[in-house]
Image (tube, rainbow, N blue to C red):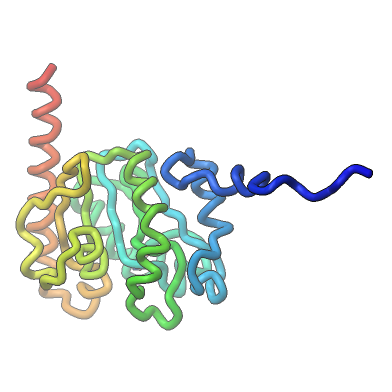
Length: 213
Ligand code: URA
């Protein structure tokens, strides 16, 4: 009689390819099927990320809210519309950049992500960064800044300078979250300054490429 029992490890191996080895399609699929943390029980849709996968600018926010959870796309609610306007003011369309979040699933009632949820999701964002290889990361808001920089300083203390992210030492700039700007519109001026810093940093990156050739 032929046994239908698979040898130990068969099947699992295919499913468990490390996230760090996945291409875009496999990564997106892995996120869609993710059950690593309890947020999968309450999400409507995963929110993988959107935009140009060859972008030089990567925008990283916090986590999907109600609108994003429903639509499966980051920054589509009121805060998202403001982010789109901010990018436009800096000369970018949404489609020019890549937009992702620290978490791929919505925390109930938009509470802060827990450290465990961030840890479960981290490999996905890390792989996205590796595939995109952006020239610049813009961390929008406290949660993105704290988790990317492993810092608990206030956004006001982290903005205004160029940080470096990961092994590639990608320039990272922190700015306020658009949801905060909706509550405190007078802070928009500072976000404008942060975008000027981002543009200047990016120009230097481009000049470096030109200089080296
Ligand atoms: N806020 C975020 O940080 N990300 C989103 O996608 C939506 C709102």
